[in-house]
Image 1 (cartoon, one colour):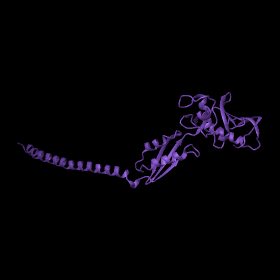
Image 2: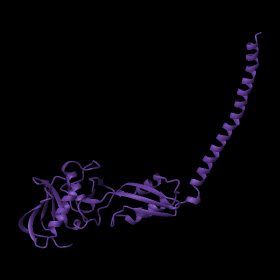
Image 3: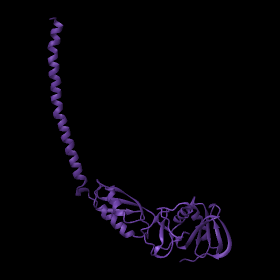
Image 4: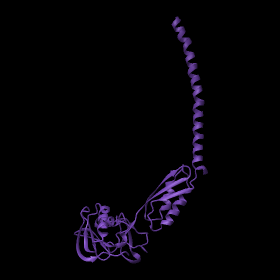
Length: 263
């Protein structure tokens, strides 16, 4: 055997011993890492639901003043929020609590460590009625038919439909009217009587007969601001209509109707 072959033969066993030693070292290290991970996860799942981070204060925002059932909705959301911790927010509990309130579109929550939860309500606003009396159906500001909401005590303008459609949301010119009425400022809502759709597009009639002619539904909020500016002009006392199709230059016509007084 040559000297080189002899050297190689002596070297190989040493390499195998070193490789085996490395494997023997890595096995307990891997086991230790797994155990540490399990302990860390266990600690996390314990602390995230512990009283150390329990929600003790719930701030509810986004419920419009005077909204039907506002106090009950706020109470339900506060009760649901106190079942959580700031490390374990459970949106499904809030959604379940809000499901009994038909005007609620969605709810979201933002925890503030260690004990506060802010709940944001995205709520539809009642905008109009279809029909009259106890069988009237409420239409929300986005055109959704809120069938489970009682119309009792709600003073809302009427849409020119004899009965509500079977679909969950209005379409076509009915939807256009609902969206325009839904954008009305709160200060003007008590003055609104009804709406219809005609040659001037969406028309909202005030108590007393004055017409607000919106054209299409685009820029409804801007058109309402223009209407409010015209109506609040002390030098203007009688008119028939306000054309708001161009809200930068609203046009006033006629002299057959007096501006309604405060209800």
